[in-house]
Image (cartoon, rainbow, N blue to C red; front, side):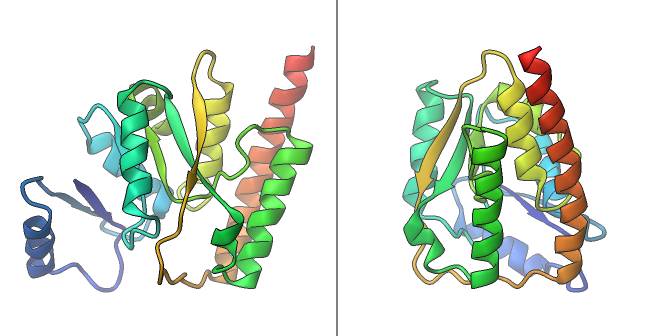
Length: 208
């Protein structure tokens, strides 16, 4: 298991790292810590790049989705039924989400479905799985914060012959959502406009 800590004012103690290592035995722990806070996308690229496994499945440190969702993803990848699997959240999931985050998530899904006609509209679920082809595409992403997921699915959807599969996931009972600072929404808004422009160019170039 690879754990990436995205830098911060409080460093992870050696005792905590040892406890994590002991908890996952007989698996081994590869603990990576960024010197400074660099963003979720940056951190996950570090973790994926460090992996030598045949398949990768990534999620958040609080494991917001049920373990069964992760194990099912691994089974699909082993059976070679998909190159990239994207978690897809159902209506039950949104009942536990703060109103503003629910609005942002549904608005984004609406744009991807009705404007860009993407087959995968839930790009922001924090659970993805992929094999070697997906890994190569994932490492091509450049966004360091939350919209790296959207960038990844966009790049994967453009890849010829790649199987991209949406997969229903369930939220673990008792999961709490962290608050997102207004500055993050502004920064990610610019990232979205860049990706949106690229998507429009890609879509219309295919028509010609």
